[in-house]
Image (cartoon, rainbow, N blue to C red; front, side, top):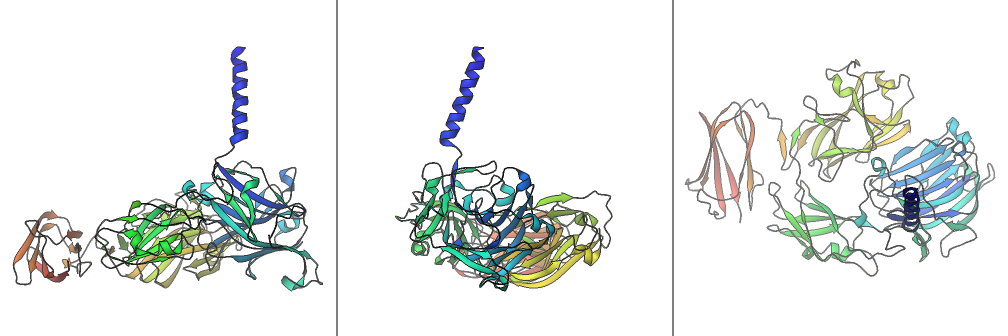
Length: 605
C-alpha cells in the first residue's frame, strides 16, 4: 500500500513539473475573437526562415469533435526556398493539401497572401495572382464559421518540416497587416469578380483586445507551448516568436553560429549561418580565413543567412578549413561570433551519365536515392518511398526495377552539379491509379516549367514506363526540381542527367575505357596542388614522370598492375626528395608498355 501511495505522489510531481516547465520550446498564436463565414482573408507578412518551423496564416473553426473539422491554410515550411503549402482540412481531419512553387524566396521580404472562401470554391493568391483553387465536393463541407489565426510552431513531424536546430532560435515571423472582406456576390468592390466587400483592416499599431486574443495552449505533435509573451506588437508589426524555455519574447541573446560550409564548382564557397546576420560584417573579407587561399569577396544572399565567398586560388582537390570571426547577427543590440572554425564540405566526384533510382536502392548503373543535405550530391526533400511487387510487369522498358520504386509525395529534388549544358530525363510509371485524371501535377526545374499538368496514366497507361527529357543550361550549380500538386500527390521514379559539364570533379564514364588516355591536369595553372587524371584500357604496369622545361626528370611514380579504368594522381609541386619546386612550366608523362602520352602544366607559387 505504501508503494502505491509513493507512485501516486511521483506521478503528481511529474504532472506538476510538466505544468510548470512544459515543452522545450515556446511558440505563439494570434487569433480573432470573432468567427467568419466565407470571405476574402488577406495578410502581408514574412515567415520564419528556419528548418523544422512552420509559419502560418489560416482560418479554423473551434470544434467539439473531428467530424466538425473546418480549416483553410497557408503554411510556410522553412526547409524550402521557393515553396508554400496550401491546404483545406475537411471533416474527420481529411487533408487536401497542395504544394506550390513560388518564383521568389518568401523569407527574403514581405509579400501579400490571400485566400477566398465561398460555398463553391476556395482559392489562394500571392501578390494578387491566383496560385491554387479547389472546387471538389469537400468544399461544400467547409461551412462552419472560422477564426482568423496566425502561429509559429515546431512540428514533431521531421519528414514534413525537417529538423529544428535549437541554436538558431529565436525564430520570428513578421506580420504587417491583416484584412477581411465579406462575401457579397454580385455587389462587392474587391477580389475575384468584385464579389467581396472590405470589412476591416488591422495594421498592428496596437494590440486590439476587442478583436484579437493571444493563445496559451498546445497539442500532440506540436513541440512547443504557445505563450502570451511570444506574440509581440512593436513598430507597427505583429511578431510571432519561437524561442527556448528561457529567453522568451522578442529577445535575442544568442551569438550567431556557422551551420555549414560547402564549396562550389566555380571555386566559390558558401557559408550558411543558423540565423540572419548583419550585412556589413558578413561582407567584410577580413572576417573569413581559408589557410592558403586568397579571399577576394563576400556577398550576403537575399535571405540574409548565407554568404558566397569568392577566392582566387582555391583548389577543389584540396581539403580546407575556414575560420569565421566577428560576424554579427541582426539583433539590437547585436550578438557577435568571436571565432568559429569549420571544415569545408567538398563536392562529390560525378560520373556522367548520372542515374538515380528515386525511391529505391542502387540498381545496375543507377545510384541509390538520398535525402538532401548540405553535403549530399543530390537528394529528395519530403516524400515517402514506395516499392511495388517485383512481379509487377512494367511495359515499355528494359529496366523495370527502376519503375517499380518511386518517391511518393515528393516536393523538391535537388542535384548539385557543375554549370554546363545537360539533357535531363525524369522517369515515371503510374502503378497506383488506373484512370485518367486521378493524379496530376506540375514540375518546375530551376524555375521553368518542365511538365504542365502531368497525368502519367493519360500519357502512357497503367504500369508503363514514361520519360520526359529536356535540355537545360545550368548557371547556378543546381538542378532544383519542384513538384506542384494539382490532383492527389506527385511522384517520381528516376532521374538521368547527361551532357557537357565543366569544372573539377567531373568524369566521363570510363569504367571500361577503350583506349589509353591522359587528361589535362586540373586546376591549371595551379598553386598548392593539381590532379592528373588518366585511363587504362587494360591491367598493366604504369609510370608517371614529371620533368622541368629543360627535360630534367624531377619525379617518378611507378604503379604496378593497375586495373583497367580511370585513375588519378595528386601532385603538390614536390620532387622526389620532397622539396617544393619553383614556379614554372612542367611536363607530365604517362607510360604504359608501348604507349606514352605527355602534357604541359604551369606551377605558380
